[in-house]
Every structure is written in C-alpha cells, then in structure tokens.
Length: 237
Image 1 (cartoon, one colour):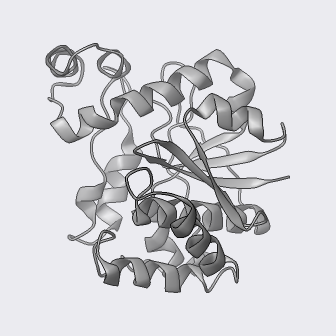
Image 2 (tube, helix red, strand yellow; image 1 turned 135 degrees about the vertical axis):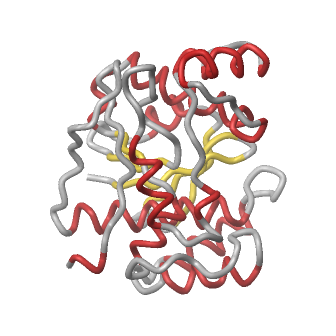
C-alpha cells in the first residue's frame, strides 16, 4: 500500500510518497488517481466535507484553538458547497452569507476551484472516499512537534529549514526528496513551501498507518463526506 501526501500548487497538485524518493506533479486530481494503484491512500491539504445551514465544520474551530496566535490564521472558514460551485465571487459571497451568515474572503475564493475539484471527484466516485483524507500542514506540524506550533512563517528560509529539520526526525528521505523536487520543478509551478507541506502530509500519513490510528470519522456533511482534519499526535504515543 502506497501512502501519498498532497498539496495544491500553482500548476495543479504535488504528490509525495516517502517510499518513492521523489515528488510528482499532476495537473488534475483525476490524473493522480489514475497514476497510483487502487490501494493507495492520500492525505490532502484541502477540505473534505463542506458545511451547510444545519451542519458546521467544527474541526476548523478546534484547530485554531490548538495553533499559536502566529499560525492560527492559516486555518480559515470553509464556504458551503453552493458557494464553492458558484461562478463568480459576488455570487459565492452572497450565497455563503445566506447559508452560513458569513462572507467569503478573496483569499478563500482563490482556492475554491481546488475545493470544488476534490469535492466533485469524491462525489463522483464513492470508492475514493475511502482513500482520500484531509489534513492541514500547520496543524500536522504542530502535532508532529509535540503540540508546539512552528515558530517561523513557512514562506521564509528560517521557516522552511525549521520544518525540514522536524520532518527529518521521521524519515531519512526528506532532504533527498526535497532537494530533488527543488531541482525538478520551476518555482512558478511549485513553491518551496508546497513541497514541504506535501512532505509533511506524507510523513503524517505514514505515522498514522504505522501506529494503527483510525482514519474513520463520525462527523459527516450532508453528502456523507467525512469532516475531520487528520494529524499524528506524537505526544500521545
């Protein structure tokens, strides 16, 4: 069974399996699914399960409480499904205010196409719902680091080194995969922090499976999709 960490990037999606010693770039998630065997599991930095008028995503609220004041802003409110599928920002903003009583930031709207792509994929193929799981890199790093949030911003050299050093404690392949990806991809396609975030989720999924931690969730949206941000809590081991 292959375990893959996924992060969205400018040119699509970057996927990393620690066993492959390399990072792969895909334009579409459907291309990624077609590339891997049917027993592959994916941990992705993208919301799975969307809020509606009667169901909220409590996992965002609890995650913000866990992170430090410098890192909690990386976790933002997820729009409702109708807003995600809206054609314009104005329509999405109006719909979300009507359904969830809150607007949508321009930053949130920017990633709506990727949320929509994943949501559509999972709703079209229910078997994939058993293979795709949600995480969030800043929360994942927090738990890998004994519940201490990262000190530096991930866009800075200090922040990137801090994160790579932590990940290297879990796998000796981290620097090899990272350096190969840096040389392989153009920065206009994949940013350095995209590579590191995918590495983080690859490590997190490896540790979850290695330690027999359940990926099941009882929290579901109105389409029966799980709503849970998966992490590996090293402090609990």
